[in-house]
Image (tube, rainbow, N blue to C red):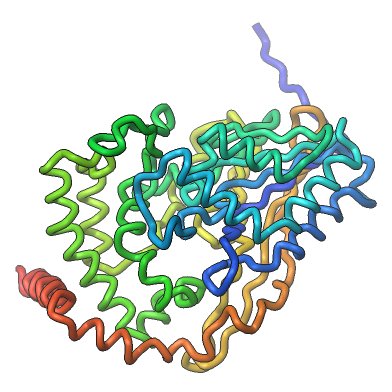
Length: 410
């Protein structure tokens, strides 16, 4: 039987999907990585005006919309996140970002039949798995008729697929079928978020150091930060070394904490990260594989890595949207910081077919002056004092001995 080739023409779009990722709205103050939600509200309102007014518009907030991971609860950062803890943190963030919720409400109510908002779960806002947190977000948006959805870790629009990207990162991968675990001891009646092992470690070790390092986390490139302020890497390496070799294993062996788990994937990745002080994961090969091995979708959109990117193979494409949170490039030996542009994605569709897609880039709004340190070096005396403390020094010496042994091995 003769096989014929048909041509499927591309027609004009009737739908626009806009994907934002890694906004990371916090609870206000200098720790908040996105204090200017009025900027995002204006962007959202813009998609309700010309030249977009004639299109159906779906806004997708593709993970880490809210930085609940770095939002404290009762002056601490518990890794046992119950419904009540999640609600308290979400309410704090919402209180400081009313402009975002107002702008989204106005956008949805202006044309409720053709506009939606979708919130994907990311590794910084896993609290969105709680139905009660979803209800709080809907209440703060306050749309009378607009459609607000919470599909979990991903969503699709015809031949477009959107997911945050943390599922491709061994540090933050979770079991999609088990977002909750049952607590033990004092928490045994409570449903706890089944956080990744890396999220638990960040809550236990790194995030409590925010008063010192809140701004260094926003700086790029990371390797340059560690060159200019090596005490940052020394402190984190020492603290994590002590945590993994003593505290984490003790809790795991005691069996009292359902979130202290061990797997070969975790151990392999942990050893690699501690050895090279690598805080970022290279997902490039994974993204290339997505477009070369599967034709389920024409376009896949991901975030998570805070670096915009584009991979294509024939007519298939992966767009990585970068981030909206505030980040800065270091120049002139760390004395100059240049705000990095915000990036997000626009994908135009006709029914289920993708017509075209691209990344959008915008200059960052100015941060409030009191939310940045005067110098990235002002923390050095306090970091050195911490490094001189007995507990930190012991961990540092142990890590140094391991590094020397590796370098001397044949």
